[in-house]
Length: 184
Image (cartoon, rainbow, N blue to C red):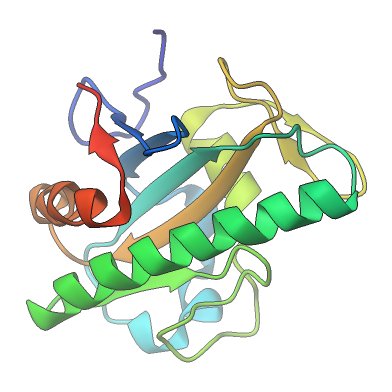
């Protein structure tokens, strides 16, 4: 597999997981993109004094290419959003319980779910493009093109002030609780 490692904190990423139904999940931890650095206070106004910030990209393989808006595709998006939110809340609360400011971005709205929202929404697709260099197709909504899954990919983002090794440990301990097993 040929994965870009631009801005990842450890070579050999992403963390490759697989769900009980065979659904692939990739998770990687990155330094923030220039957009997040430039707009952090406008996205997360309560985070203005954070010296360190890490971006956790969660990519879930979809059963459908995300190019159109059909009832099946919209249902798939909602199912993947719910999976991410269940997992993301568990990771976020685990890290918050240890004293690290952490939040997840609602993939539907672009706004944080645990912090006061700012005046600018977060753009998951733009961040994945910036940090992983994946192509984006401009459609009614912008669609990522994964190197192996094509357009059948659902992106989600967590942000945390926790050190990457702590984030990784939380991810690896919580993923099995959501039916996601490590493939590596």
